[in-house]
Length: 117
Figure 1 (cartoon, one colour):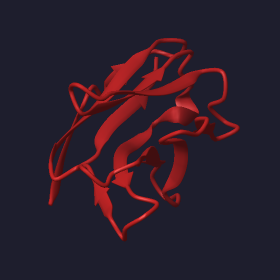
Figure 2: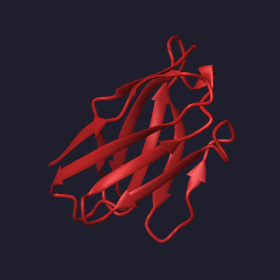
Figure 3: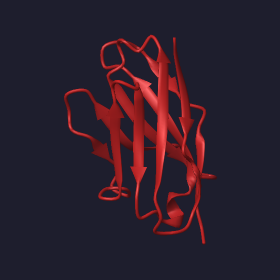
Figure 4: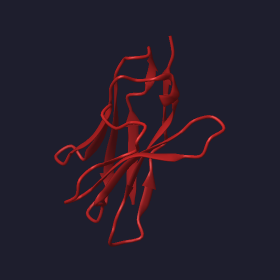
């Protein structure tokens, strides 16, 4: 089993920055997919960014050039650096860890990001 704890959300003005963190614990040996999703009110959950071990990061078109996904293998933590935030980035952000070799799918509890003046 894997446990995920997210942090870093909050209220920020347009143009500001936030860094989300997702700390993983437990049996993460087979985990090689790390992603961030978001869900705005009344909308479906959407993929924001994803890293697969050995591959290039993927970013949704709406966040390219503004968001960066990264990982710290020592701390077992995945980050989402969000710059130049826009009101349309307002959503609950979820960390997701999985595997390309096993049917593993773990979700964080979600963290609220609100971009407003």
